[in-house]
Image (cartoon, rainbow, N blue to C red; front, side):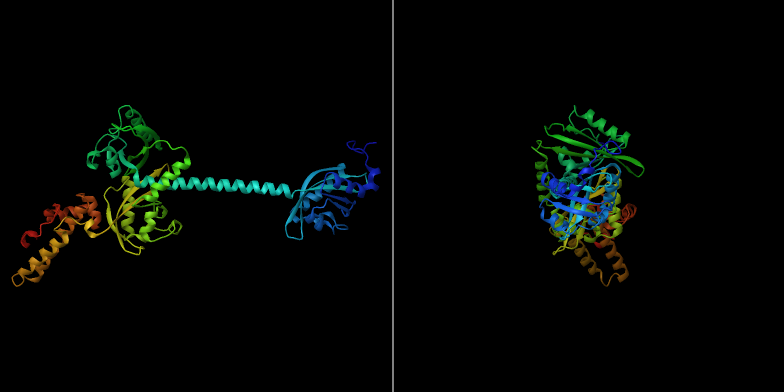
Length: 483
């Protein structure tokens, strides 16, 4: 005999045996079985011996089934009872029972109605073991993801620092494809002085078979406005290189920032590459730091941390680089602007560093790091051990100025004080211009930056003191010649 819907056999005759059926189901295939009346109240509980579930379910008899589950799963009990009343059979649903220990016990229930007006028999499977396995899987997956992203971040960090410290950098005019600027690493790589590189075609240093590919790389970067990278070989060398070109604008002119990195024998794995980068960056004597376009620190190497007296890189992240440099905000802004517009600042500036236990003087250079729309600035800081390291050969500027001032004192009584002061001021200006030109290796733009004046102002002052162009000052000239 079939049910009213014709999809289930008539289970009415089994209604009196519901408690025994509950015990049977528990013993055969489930962890818990409930006999529930038409009002949804539990009349019988049979359990398979799972201690937390047994302790939780021992007082359920006489309570509404919906009141034994957590609030977020009450609607599932409603749907299950509605479905079993309508069709005689309810599909599996997972609910949570609160336990005395405070943790929820997940149970998956199915239910069958024993006859049209008979009780409902609900049998459940304890899901804690499955939930534990699922949680372990999720935790393992999260650990793997954290490890993966930590590895990627570390790799990116060390590549960035290594790029700042060691890459050969060329700033190329996008129209002529000639070199406008180069750093010392490029001079070393191509076995030429920096001044000898400027003005040459950007492809000159590569072997003839690689030149068409390099030329195409530069043309593609220029026309597409996007970074591009290839492999190429240097002229006269067996070492392969990675050549990357990134377009950027400087004073409404298109430029290409070309980075050339030598490629060693391919490592056995990515891990060995990471280890190599870590070792090389950590062993760099120069402080290397990367900032965003407004000078906030993103990453720094151990040498920089030691230089500024900070133990952990996290203590620097997001803070202004200006906090540790003896530069005004306008000076740092000008340095960053020059790096962004020119690609790099080849001529180093001498600035004091604060924060270290022993005050230090450093030479600082900046370079643009451009990857698509992302820009950051890489700084290298080389510590100057003593004043002698940056001063011109003896007689020094200071000694020369002191001798010249002493010679002025011989005019006391013959020359009025205002005139002596004018001559002393002219002497000091001449010697400071000479020192700036000496330190900037003759570059007037860098010398002007050191003096904190414009190039035009330096040119005017230089015309008043033509001897300031000399590599070493000449303190033994008579005062009237120096004025």
